[in-house]
Length: 365
Ligand code: ATP
Image 1 (cartoon, protein in one colour):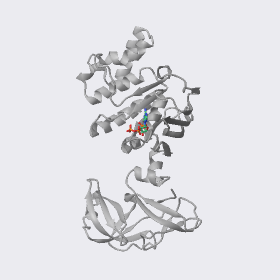
Image 2 (tube, protein in one colour):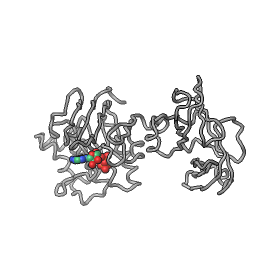
Image 3 (cartoon, rainbow, N blue to C red):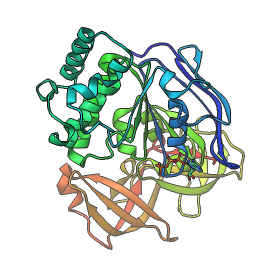
Image 4 (tube, helix red, strand yellow):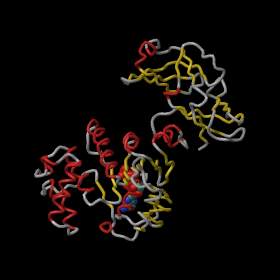
């Protein structure tokens, strides 16, 4: 269960380096217990924003309020915040238990209390039996568990994760993603993570902020971001998408009608924007929303004819690359469990692509 709204408030935060704007007027409100991802390509400003939260950078402008306290003026060590780095930053000469105890010792906690807390934290990350080992005697996944135990030992109000799975291979990464979420949720810790990996953000975070050039382009739950992208940038950044460019022909009560040079028929969209006639828009259509058929579908709109240029096999599904007569290429996915269906098709086949009225989202920017 997520707690109070506005537990962490980032208000109009801006960070400039010698006149270069790395973070541009970012405002976010994060709930207690929420796992929140800052997602974006290299250089978008996500690490700078995280470093402002940690106290390693001071914002040029703006406020950061954590649990009612403005923390902008506080040095990192006075903030009730812990940061787990991609490299884990474990002390190599210290054992696992000494690593976890380090922060507690510095705070002057009593010896017996430290021992109890370290045991509790190592049990939480299932590393109890490795307490005496040194970091170099551990696998990457085990080192990460120790780093997590160390970050959580002081019960921070906010846990910051910098590309938390960056050093792990793909299989271990997906296992650790679920484990980390499980532990963080069990403790109810509020967590802000930075990642460039959309799958990581989608599987771990309750909500995601998509960043680009210092700006937040969209904030939403993983399915909101995927199903209802607000702009071309988000639509293209998350997953694969067909963007069909056109103009609004009619904006009726239940439908927006789009005329597109790529299409023989008008496109109807049952939700999305209200717009004016002639307004340039793009229809964002995910490949799995498109049906591939040999025969012309009976529906009067939302269909187009094309030629299969390529079929890429991905195990669970195949991606059809279909060229339309005007030259536009659309991608359509077909689930391979219906193998008999995808095997009906081959290169150069003429096919019909069709989709439902609710399948696409109209984008104006
Ligand atoms: P990456 O995933 O590569 O770490 P990022 O999205 O986290 O990228 P930032 O590290 O926040 O991006 O950097 C954002 C921009 O700010 C970049 O153009 C970077 O060059 C610039 N920048 C970051 N730190 C400094 C600094 N100390 N001095 C000058 N420019 C900086």
